[in-house]
Length: 330
Image (tube, rainbow, N blue to C red; front, side, top):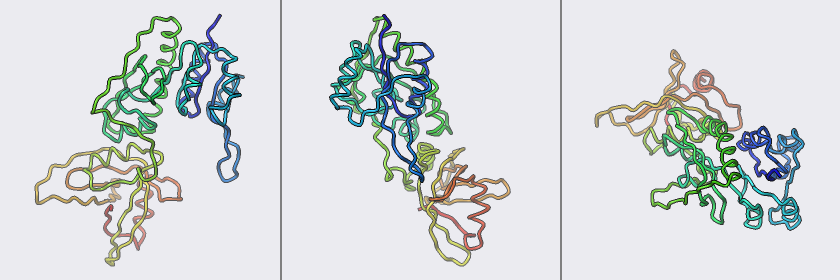
């Protein structure tokens, strides 16, 4: 008899993994995903990407409001599942992950034990990492601490953004998911205990206060910071404008894409810690620079307005008569 699988997931990141399970014709009994919610101006009901995919293939769907609900737990136990698979979902209580005969494994978007937490892709880019990857591991009582089953490495390119790396890792996930299932089902499984180290970096959840640019850091760190929030939610900052009348004004902006970081060699006399913004209309470039580096802004938006490319921002906002002058970040 084919072994029974239940899949837990909600976000887009989990869709490629679920599609692989469907394509490989594993015995997928049900999916568990978040409840529907109302969103947008019209407060229309929004369904998770996982629910939409499950509906397409007529897979049973559970949407518990509370994972500790006795009725929900009873329904899972009646199925007598062999394996739970968790991708981009909330923390499961032990009464849930302890149900299946062969255990519950999770797919995490980092090379554990590095970047345990809710936002591993963001923090890997923010910290300027050159490499990350995917890890499958058996869930236990501590978040992202279980024994490792498999890992797959992935190079982070110099200009790669959070959004680009997110999609790349999502596309890599089907392979490691199917290989992990096969290893567990065949029973020839050797897991690896996660080693603890003082050098381990965490990946906590991102809050609004975390996306504000600190211009006291060096240029490369700021470049990586912006990449880590590109394209969404974007990195927030304040642009200080000193116009030709020597009047100062401030404008809140959100930088959503940057490229082409270059370090700059400087003498002590050339040292200028303040970051300035330069608009080169001939080259159609917006440049951010100080004494130790520079990079291009590709896309930007003013809060409450649509994202635009840098040239449109330069020709529009910066070229307004009252805004022509010198631009600095604070």
